[in-house]
Amino acid sequence: MEAQKSDIIRQLQKDILLLQGFKACTTGTVVDVGLGPVNMAFPNETFPLGAVHEFISTSQEETAATGGFISGLLSPLMRNNGVTLWISRNRMLFPPSLKFFGIDPARFIFVDLHKESDVIWAIEEGLKCDGLAAVVGELADISFTASRRLQLAVEQSKVTGFIIRQQPRKLAVTACVSQWKISPVPGDAIEDLPGVGFARWKVTLLKVRNGKPGSWELDWAAGKFRHVPQKAAAIAPAEMRKTG
Image (cartoon, rainbow, N blue to C red):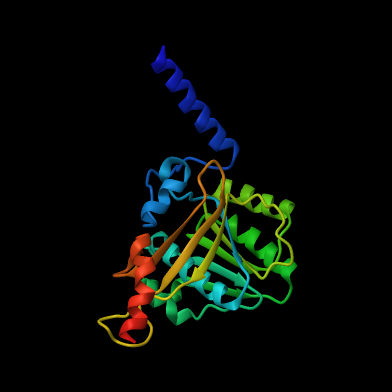
């Protein structure tokens, strides 16, 4: 009897995920984007692919940090010569910096447009193209209706979408499966040398469908994300001030 109840519960959970936009991978492969303990926050403990993720940036520094973090997510998605479409009005990404994340900038198609309405249209059309690894779009605001169209597009194409909302005028509800806020934090010095260390972010998962929001510190080293334990994250700045 208990086994039957467990089977019913598991099936209901799968049905709920399908209704909420989490589609099972049909390619037979699962891509691990390397987020480590962050994966525990997601349904099935797996970063949702074939979905649209929303990132909120309230400053230029956060926008730059968000671009770096998304580049880290794109790195495993583009390993098999994948191509990503990056659409924006005021692009802040410096293409050569993609090499830091093991990505060839030549594998990106950058589309710079003048009107935000054109950006939204281009993102939707890009997400319909199943030949792309991912689509990244930079804009300020997006309506629920527009975000729902994006989610419907990826449910057909299985392309993963990333929306960077730069200094949004309002935080309206969207159909995106998750909402993030990425903030830069000081990284550890490299071999006690002064200057910039490894890229490090405070990663806050504000919302995720059928998952568990939370906050973590991650950095990028040796070509992958690395989780920074809370104790180490708290001690590092003090050590840096002492050595400085």
